[in-house]
Length: 381
Image (cartoon, rainbow, N blue to C red; front, top):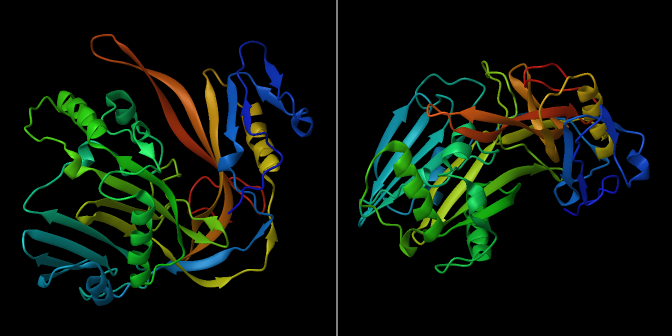
């Protein structure tokens, strides 16, 4: 989808040093906007998707046929099937390969089926009894780095290159294989968000940091045989992606759900692991609503901060139009919303007195139809 933002320049970078208020410079449409001291607006229009109208959708979680998923995903013959409260788990054991597939059905196979299905599946593969500790060297979370990642720096995705080739296979070819893999299951309304190239050198550097943190030794060696692609994808409806990270600041309760989960880890042995959960199936849709623009949404955010006392540097570094899921009885409403990522500068002091800077991330979500803030997914819209 082409970016259509015209109200915000390619890069708005406001560095506020003194004075109670500053104004955005060099942009006539925004000259009247007063920005509080310590607030930094740092937005790149290449990451802002502007859409004039959109619908609100009533939806339930996508329910997949466990047998169909097993037939299409598993490469080896099934030797064990287990029934759990959350769904069916299939296990295979081929020539040096073990696979595990769990298809979530909300308890249907277990005999406690509920109408609301937390659908999807997870998949993992083990080759020649070798467990590759990818989780120790890269975070699979598409959201911003958590406190521990910023301090310990052993799983930062920002250290890896994106959309570049590894020796075993070109990233574009991997992308097409993965999209075809999902299509066989019946999942087609998705797009690639980012592809990280997990090279051996960077993974080894991260692994050494991890071992320092946990205080352990290891004889595991990272070679080109373990290189892989981490692919994050998003469900897309009406050219608007569904949010794929946790945006709600409060602890989620009951059937509150704030993100779809969709990633694939792909190495020379094919799909190594995948997490595909909380995708939506549309039941009905509203008429088209005119959406507030990116400029209007930015003004709402700045108005919010005008009423706050900001004592430390606070950056607004991402702005994206998403569909977010809000609770609607036993169903969900998918509401178009402007989501701002907020990074508040902080410092952590270790036991030895050493100061470590980091950012505390949060999100400010604005209903793009009525301009109201959405603080949690159970709020009535």
